[in-house]
Length: 581
Image (tube, rainbow, N blue to C red):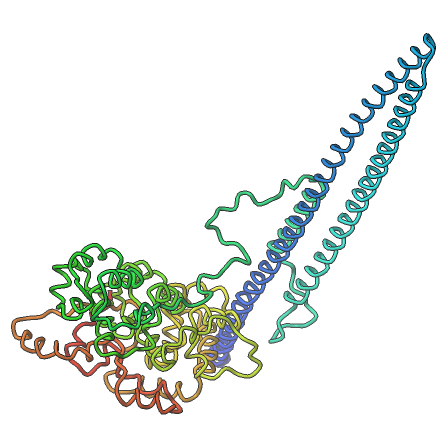
């Protein structure tokens, strides 16, 4: 009976012990994920500290360049002093020559009875000798002044450089202590985070550089190895300012139909179509020749085989014939390449530049145009679509996209986020402690318009583009929290409702857009659509939306859901989207 009771008690306790071990294992797993998040945050802080150190090194190097320039000035002063010394030696030679001449004259005077003329000559020589001595004294005084200035300048430069270096070790220590302080969430404030080996290496690097500066006296640390195309701080940005196109109306007030062949050729050169000037000069008798030409005539007579070049020319000629000037016509093809940088698609700059795609063509861009420009990614199509919509709403203002964060004390609204460039989105990632993933957005096509206007773009899509592994649940949760705060409650609610709708398909980062395959049954339908190709525009601004923009509607970015390539109602457009690659 005793043995049976013992066995019963053991069986009752073992499940309890197993359950306590599982709870402890779950708690340890949670602590492990929290520590992994802390390590990633500390890594970001270490990288930021390294950036500060590099900035300090660049400022130190700049001061060193100033010191080198001062030394060059002092060397010039030394050269001038050497020239003065040579002049002094020349004068001394002349003085010795005059002394010898005077001695010779004295000997002649001793041997012969000198006359008054000889005495006058001697007095003249003595006066010249006194003048030469006074010049030598002046040169000696200037020499002493130059030597004193040289010594004083050297002492001042050494003192300034020493103070600057001391002020930089202090700043480095303060920033290191402040940035590497323990995290406030869940970490004991009494435990200090140790300085990483990378920071120690940067300290040693600055000291080594300081040692080189102290040992050199001739400016041998100049960065002569900097290549002409290499990145340099303080340089000019590629997107510094927009370039506005010169429209044909600025050439002359004469109607285009009455333009001379020379005026037409000049306009083609300014439009970026200078390769067709020679053929146009022989073919076009006036501007009316181009106005009445068909696409086949342009291809045959001017040799314009590139469909984008023909479209560019036809849109410009249409504006002349209708006498309407659109705001998009002020933006030339150079501005478009900079706009591709802003929306995060710099890899297509070569194709767009070769096609001479300008602002007017962006306004009337079609899916087939993008495919001809080798833009096949579905996500990139959506990026261009949303970016064009932002241009429509802002009336093609060339500076509507924000590239740098401003002095934002208050919380950023979604109407401001929709105008963020790709670089501004990366700055936001750095501000929410995701700096190590920010470079992954280069070439992704992610900008503020895509984030706000595309209903299928959510935090999971952004996490995939940032290459955040699915097992890093805490990081993904952190990104989702900040993403929801960024887009706002209204856009968040619309994205959630769209996700819960029937037939919802998540946005894929690898899906491709393929051209339409036309069969014999589609030729009649194609012939009907050629009369009005507005439905084929990648971002058609519907009449209601145009009226809302003109009337200053409160939500000019609403009503964008139907503009997605896979959400359009036209079945022919839906067939263009291919499977995931």
